Image 1: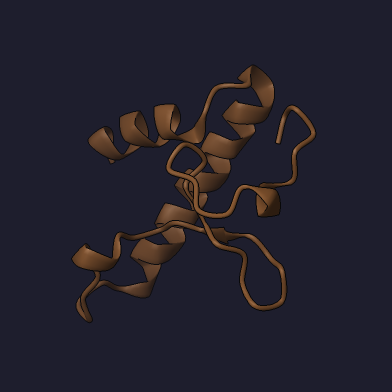
Image 2: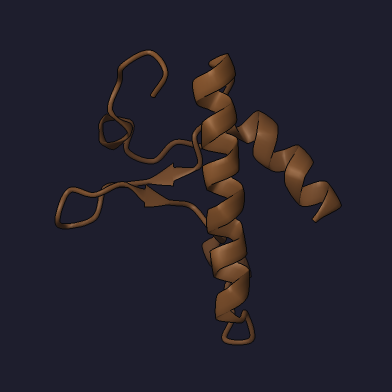
Amino acid sequence: MRNGTKLTDLGTSHYMHTLEPSSNGMVQICHWRDARWHSGILLYKVFLKGLLWIEAYEQHLATGRNLSEFVGTMTETA
């Protein structure tokens, strides 16, 4: 994170759109809510959500603002 904290130290974070680290200790980004997940979601949509997360993370590094501030505005127009 911009302040030097590791994303893996956050665990599940609404503000940074992350889930608990995976079994190998890697960060898991939140790309879809469990309650809204279904078999009709195509892989390209998962990749698109990943791209949005990366763009929001870049903005976080530049400004220090939480990802949730950027993700919400990006998904409203996507």
